[in-house]
Amino acid sequence: MSKDNPQSQDFRISQNLIHVIDITSIISFVLASIQSYTSIVPHKLFLFIAAFLFIAEKVISYYQVKFFEEAHKIRQTVLLDNSFGEKRIPNYDSSKYFDNESIQSGEIKLLANIHENTLYTVKIIEKMLPKYYVISTTLFVLLILQVCYSGINDFSSSLLNFVISSDFVIRTIKLRNLRKAASSVFEKANSICSDFEKNMNTVLITRKIINIFVEYEEAVFESKIVLNEKVHRKQNSLLLREWEGIKKTYKIYSF
Image 1 (cartoon, rainbow, N blue to C red):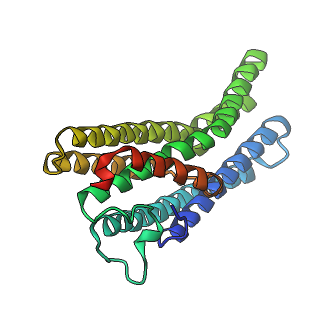
Image 2 (cartoon, rainbow, N blue to C red):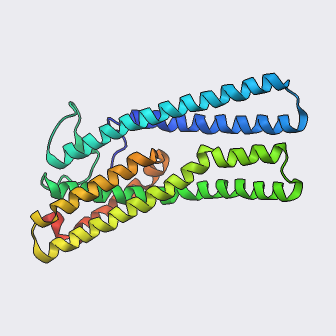
């Protein structure tokens, strides 16, 4: 599954803006922590800096979501183009994004593309989550230790605000939810493939395919999560072999 696609640029911009948001949050926390102990910055100036960083983070968040949503629309178009042999995106071969050219265009190919997408989503998130777990857990442990040691003071208040409002912590929860949703859709795709082998009737499974398409797309759109491109590159060959093995398992993909 290629990462060089029409939606890639918007996804990369969205991902870069996420990094900027994280940096802005860290700067705000560090400044608040320093100020709580030293009051090195005049109070009015500190409030101005804090307000500026807060507004800047909200503006960046707006554009991060905007670029994500635009990329998501393009990716969805690529998915449908590839599945049904259409070409709403000119000068682009959608077969570069998926690995299912051996399957005839139609609802079965849509199933295969969703099946492959969910496999990649689950496996990539599984590689991303440990880092998020470690950092989020560390923040909560630091907060608990700080409160137990010093009680509620300016520093612990700043740390509490950072933990609660940090996009990084919220993103950890969103990643878990997206993995859960993608895993559910993947299992439903497996079930559809198994059901087909019982009666070999594509008409009976069309509605189920549409349902999992909607379920997966809604989960991705709601999460606003951009999967890590470096993890994708490292895992791509392994995941492609795994997907090819899954395709061979089910008769529906050679029907």
